[in-house]
Image (tube, rainbow, N blue to C red; front, side, top):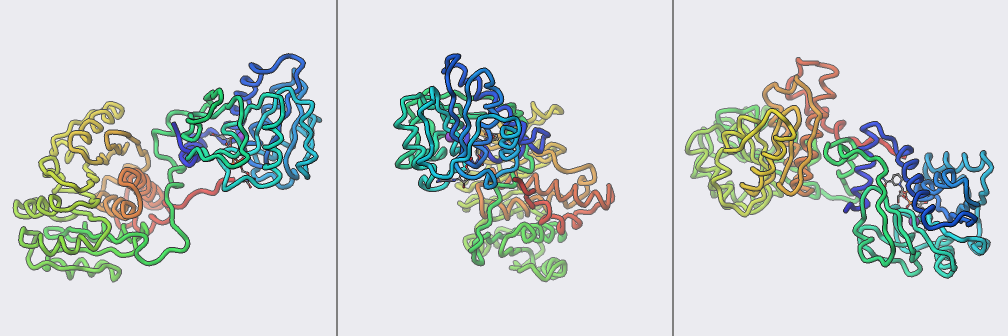
Length: 479
Ligand SMILES: NC(=O)C1=CN([C@@H]2O[C@H](COP(=O)(O)OP(=O)(O)OC[C@H]3O[C@@H](n4cnc5c(N)ncnc54)[C@H](O)[C@@H]3O)[C@@H](O)[C@H]2O)[C@H](O)CC1
Ligand SMILES: [K+]
């Protein structure tokens, strides 16, 4: 079962893997033709009613696979207004190859009387709102016609995510849906067939550029809408929390604050004027700091705990107390990772260990990445949190689901890249679901590393990645 919005992520990932949308459209059209052949008899007239989007495009392809039938293709609207290049190219082919095509300007001119089989290719997953003309009248005519109706992907007028039917939505006899069934089809009284259109499994397993579509930023937003992140770090180290905080800012968090021991506050502030600091008396995090830290924590959307804290017993005790009493979302990195499995908490944790830290947490790894996925998924289930295991293949799992991100390069084994990942993930977790935040955090951080490796090769340093984060978050344009 796949949501329409998810389908578009998977489509774009397939494209990134070298299977362009036009090729998927070819497979869709072909699969559709197979289904039509099963319901049609030799002398039948197949009448395709197409819209101006890719749903129509699928059916333009179908026409070429049904040369043994009498096929008529009717486009609702003018060919110049077809919304995508791939649909328009397939329409142009039909016209050039002299298929029986016509542009319908006025829906009352749509004549369905010759049809033995009607193909509803007006609207697919691209629908928004109630049916508008000329689709509305055409849908009513299709419902009133005697011929059986076969809908392409989803019935026109059905919201594939919610199952909501527009007033005059098409009520088909058959539906051929692509790749996977859609939630909105569940209640439909029709014969539903799922067609494999050649999307590789990898398009769902591997995080690819299509996943960037999950990043959403509302235009009418206000300060605070994109998250306030509190970093709890520093003490023995100063660079780590500064990198984490700057990475969170570059990812788009509105406010990022760092709570750290007074001994290092000045130095951390020195890295960037963009950081706001909450210094805590002393040289390292201690149990006495827990009260004030929790007060700050409640004012923020997400915590990132760990960068540069060190593993002093008192520090780990304080970290334990913070995680125990917190009930929001927190990214846990570095030394406090080792105490996570023994902590009972309401908090939603995203743990970001590398192999060594995973083992220290009590988890098991394997040289084989697929086996590693299973082991980490089991471990995530045991501890009840999301785990992002860093490596050449970053594995993200919350037990229910797992994804693998392959961005990044050998140069990134340099110190500090993990601190950046924690900051990127923290900023994302302030505005989206923890699993998605971890998936995108891994992908974006690796992509930032790939961008700077073009210039610095293996000589890249963690701070180079900061400026590359916004570019790494950019979505490629699709038509
Ligand atoms: N991997 C796959 O599943 C593939 C699916 N394909 C097919 O593509 C469609 C989705 O195509 P898209 O272009 O995004 O949208 P539609 O064709 O569904 O509709 C866009 C079209 O409709 C107009 N419109 C929107 N809402 C309304 C409305 N309420 N009333 C009237 N008109 C409306 C809008 O203006 C546009 O013109 C998917 O379903 C599959 O069939 C591809 O083949 C690739 C592989
Ligand atoms: K349709």
